[in-house]
Image 1 (cartoon, helix red, strand yellow):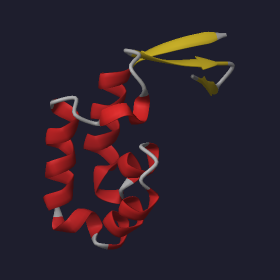
Image 2 (spheres, one colour):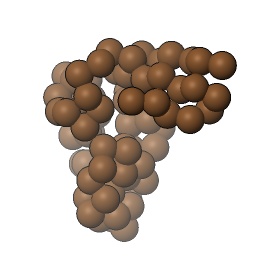
Image 3 (cartoon, rainbow, N blue to C red):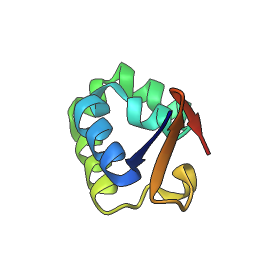
Length: 79
């Protein structure tokens, strides 16, 4: 079964809900920043705000590719 999700909505939700834990940085492949963000609780909210602005302006770069949708086939991410 194939499911498609809007990439921007996916990033906004994860940044808003899990940004303080650094999950959004882990998803982008920035493990070092994700760990640092996790240890500092999102930089006391500062990093979370910055990442929210990055997500809203769609400036997250090529981490997610140029496509506008994520595709999951049988529960697995498909690039």
